[in-house]
Length: 373
Image (cartoon, rainbow, N blue to C red; front, side, top):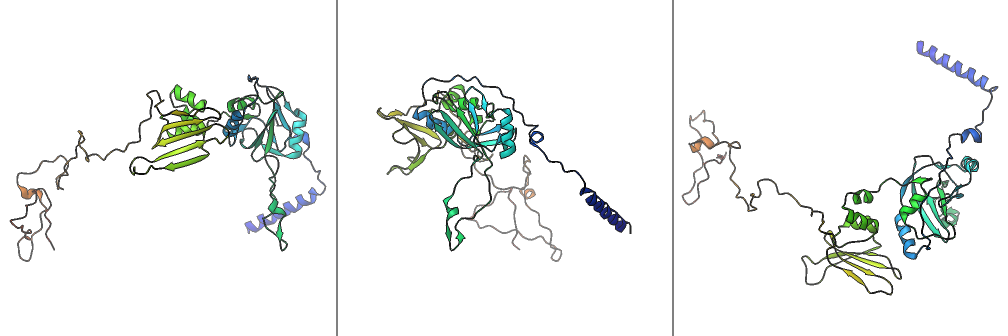
């Protein structure tokens, strides 16, 4: 009864609200109220830049080290291709226009959201970076193909939800490294989050950290160091010389392609044994001597279970099983170390233990004697 009364009271209240809502005033969220919390403060960077234009090798290094990089948004990013950041200069559009674009086009990332560089294009005077897929939906021609009025590809209503930032330089893109590009993008994106390769490189000695930062491979490095220095290779080859079935197999990682500089990094096990650098118009550089300066991470070892080997490395003779506890001394009588069988109540005698032939060696006194049933 109480539950029925509660329901009727609730329904009557909702009905009364619905009648009064007809005459209620409708509030529409405007541009100023929707963008009131968007911060537009800006501080330009002061990164020294080189005067020489970007080389082909520098271009490849930028693409290799910036694509798929992750960071966090320092400001709200719109779903728009019109965000232009001048190197060590201002950000356009201005604060009011920036808020208007977010209000009209939508927001791709809020402050603190993770963003990923999904595409990158380098032009003579600018670097164009697409974040989280970019502001345009990728075109797929199969969406326009039909067979018997049935679409070949499934059509979806997905919309682009990424952003685009254009890093504009004065005159031309200079010879610049990936960390310098990240420093120029600091007002918009924070790349301070370390990757696993960077975190691993920080644990290495200074000499190896400098080599990895300069993208150099030293003879004696392991796979993880090479990945931190150059990233994943473009090609891999595995080979084993004929007539050497045991330890002659090796793996070679290849970086670059003609006509650019090509690096051949050969591994034997987990160590780099040979590095060959083939530059156009130059003799091939071959590095086959250890360059680690006495540093080498220990080889992965496997500990033998305690008791398998003696302290001097010799094999220990396995002792026969016993009923004695660890550290317990054997009794004077050998029968005290054997399993005692109960007496047969019917015959009044204990079961006889199996006899041994004279030719067979008698078992040790501390072994359990089991009588066949």
